Length: 305
Length: 226
Image (cartoon, rainbow over all chains, first blue to last red; front, side):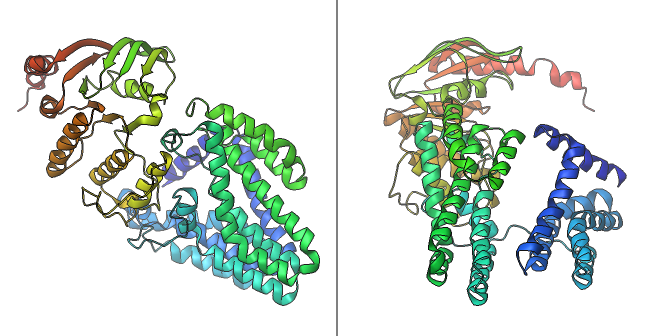
């Protein structure tokens, strides 16, 4: 059991090294980052506790994957597997539990602790035979697969929009829009197998334009109910809402372009920091977008001459 | 026609391909054989433009990759994509539309199911169906018969014969010599990154015997099975 955790620790360290991050800094940044984001949620929305519960539970469910649990069970036996799974669940839940306790939400924190113990005894099959329908079947790739993995987010985002209209809170409505865009961004954070780039009979420039066009069309489809509702109910802030919508697009485009700057490798830390800086100063996006577009086109030239 | 001149490829100090010269003509099927690590897959990757190389690869249709159907030894299929969507993705990549998926599903694959749930053989058949529907002129099939059931192997053999009739260039690597024997016009033997022998149809039998002799040697006896 000790060897298992040591192996997990080494694997995480290797991944951090590969991403060009000092492991110690990586641990501090991920714990600090989660606590910061959770706390930010408390400042920005009244639904923060549900968000924390949802995010933490989704991680716990991922760890309860059937094949993974079966592997642990056959390797370590049932008793050790329960202990391993409980410890893993607790480690993953710690930032959430910590923030909930800090905000005196003892019942919610207790619920997470119970979930950690209960889910350690359960396993779920992650692959069902049922195929989730998607509106993105004509251009199957990131959005088709991504939509199927994240579809529960969209009713939540639309529900938040209704709540925003109900309480007359524009910021809450914009948060719903950000949620849809953040999920769309997540489809583009991991580089695909090079075969899926190579196979296109396009130049590198045409290929990146195609990716940007498909992503823009699809994310518009998903965010349109939110955008139209906000424009109708908060018509006095039309300029700001449209500008916000445009900035969300700039972030989507920079993440797609950034993926191909370092392709086939994962996005490096410098690029990540640049994108984070843009969150603080969005106009920077207008300057870096053309620069990284040029770099991504150049990088893909070998695969797409 | 595809012409390869003085092709060399290094990974660090390890020279995987050494001055390979080959020529492939329209309407012919070529077998590429050799031990594991002989450089077959690297040769295919260089032709496809997936790896950089020294030397020259030319063809009558350029860039080669836009006219090439590449079947890799292990097809990478990502999660939450159905078989039909995988084929559509590969067809979209070559601007092929209006494909009748049901009629062209010759391997009877469950196209509405997630492709990641397919068995190894089914994934290979799916990848093969997709590259066939791309209407390519060149085909590279790296171990196409591995993991595929006997019935599908028969279908695959007929497909390759049909491609030949359609004047396509087909390159195949396989460890199953009997299939190469049936479908290939020429076999190239690679050894340690060098093309050491080109054999025409009439010499296939002798090549097979030679390969068995080299591969087998005294190895089984040395094992001293009891």
